[in-house]
Image (tube, rainbow over all chains, first blue to last red; front, side, top):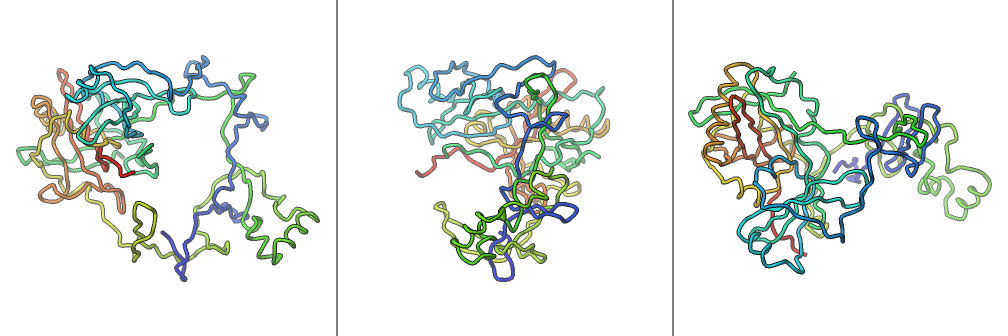
Length: 171
Length: 234
């Protein structure tokens, strides 16, 4: 916490480079504009992939039954960067699934909290503390061979300890 | 310039290697309804000195503020609102809206209910992961399934070679872990008991190194965790 000489807490603001404006927190609007500086409402935006083809919107998976695959190799979890964790309160678990989870097996499904244009991998597991769902995105790390060039600049150098907090969801 | 760390293998040989974070894959982008390109821009919505608290300081009481709002537009700086934000500097702002020129950081500890329990001067915490100090080989191996089911691995970095010698060095580590089918605990300090802190005042992590080999290629990833999968008190 940053305080002034009276130990009163201070807040972060933004000062424009020309010194013309001091912007308090919450006073910046994020808008989509086209090349003519016309605002395009979020509801009018169209999501496209790298080839320019429209991406289909998906619904939230909350409250909707999702298929599970597995048991999976635990390395599949290692291939993903965990971005959210949910502690689950199991109201009903099938006997077969319960037995496998209790035995240490891990299952995989898909998860999207709000819906939108992409979902994430979801890993269902159980330990001594209960049931958990780990939500993650692929790391896409590639194997390194002697032929490949040695290390390059880390484009995501800030990512090890950035300001993004892990979304603990229900925790 | 790649980011470097110094690690030790089980034969107590150490070497500088590079680390790389996962690349963020762009899965989609936006266009307008007429297929026109669009860009996300930031605009000024309000400026200091025009919110309710500032108007209250200027006019004295809410009735006077109401009258001022009827008479004019004191809540908007017409010269600045709507302008593109452009490049800015982060500053600290006091309660009265003035910029802080001499900051004092405090360490405030709160309980799970959010109530403050103590406060004191903030002491800088130094990084424990540097280019020079070699991270020791702990020798503490864990089955992969156990690590995955006990810890939240919220950060990861890939270890890469910087020359031919370090390629062989890292390949051997990966081969060893691949054969054992386990992950090795990574920590800082002479006994690998200290947390991994990658920059000053950074978050402390415990690390688990994973290795895989496919033919002549290897994959070595340091998985970082600062959260265990435990019951949360409701």
